[in-house]
Image (cartoon, rainbow, N blue to C red; front, side, top):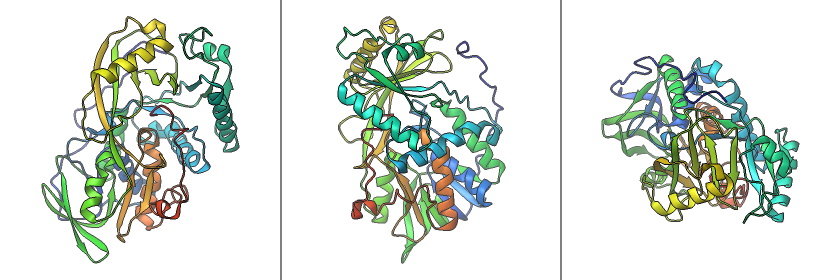
Length: 408
């Protein structure tokens, strides 16, 4: 690992324009986070559709894109999940070249620790499932865990001894704001409008179609509409009269003061209930599961901070004297089967992308690719076809509660 803050790129003063909305667009994307921006990029790049507006209620990338912990992996259990996350990971591996912009994608590997015999059985099962899907996955014993990450406490005499771990060497982290800026720059260069401070307040409909989007900056005509609003999705679908099985929960995280390079990988633990990585500038980034209640709060809470730091110190005694720098919350949208909804809706020209829960960042380029295909053709891409809204009526669920791990 290089020294904290090393090789951070210098940005030009302006990466995108801030135009006033035009009266009509072929496609209106609601949500200017990673998924909305990636969808705009791939509409232009893969389908030549550039008469597109991305509407953002606040500032570009200021929602969950700015409030996540940047973990990237594809080692999910079920075939459908593995396919979309692996497609995304392959795109991550070439994204800097594709965007012509640095995103600091660091493939430092991801460890998922096992602390019980049931953890071990489930983890080995997932490794074998990953291998069948062509995903790099390994099972490590405690000594191998220590070899990958020497600062993990692998003593057998602790509350939850480390019995082993899954390891995905190609997993890692990226710089979340740079990812948003890179996609935004690419979209604007293609002629797409990014319109900030533009809140969607309603929709104009005609039969089974949406004809326009009502916003705080006026009515905007729309040939097609893609909803990419994450935790605020249900506030939009309610206005359309489309019931969507998602619940919004706060997800809290925190970072430490800046430290010298000490943590070489990403470590996640369900039993001790924390995940920890070290960001490019040097701060430790950690979090746990979603808050149990529904809400839209974006502040940290002392009891969550205490539990996360206690869990981190249990796994990493070397962090005992590290000091907290800041804490925050994002709003995540959770479905009953912990898998996303990406596809069509009862409206002929409205497309839905939501329910990613805690896994949205890692899916950014992959879902942008698939949603752009769905919007451009009117039909789901084969990769996102299983993630239909109708599965909650048919029962064809994709239950990823286990592989979704401790939030990420």
